[in-house]
Image (cartoon, rainbow, N blue to C red):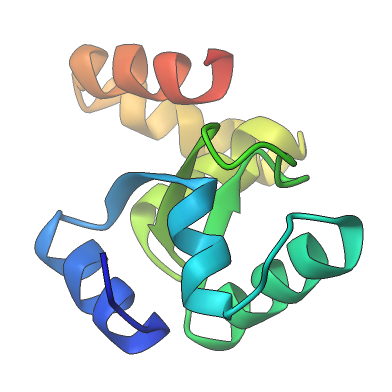
Length: 115
């Protein structure tokens, strides 16, 4: 896969704001050889600078491991933040999803967060 961060973001947008990719793809986009801590931190910064977040928060070191990417500022990002960083405001946001009858969305979020 020969893409750059802009194309990755476009594909993420086309995937309704959520996409799973292998760390090897991110390593290649970054132009790195190995997934050491500095490379993973650089990938994280590059994703953020292009409006993308990732889960897990600490990127894995194996090129075969999968990570989930999401668009920052999106409803998905709000839910990820609410789940990973509990606050009363985040709890209310999660409750509103439940009140809206979005049980399937909550199930999917549980799969994302739970692995």
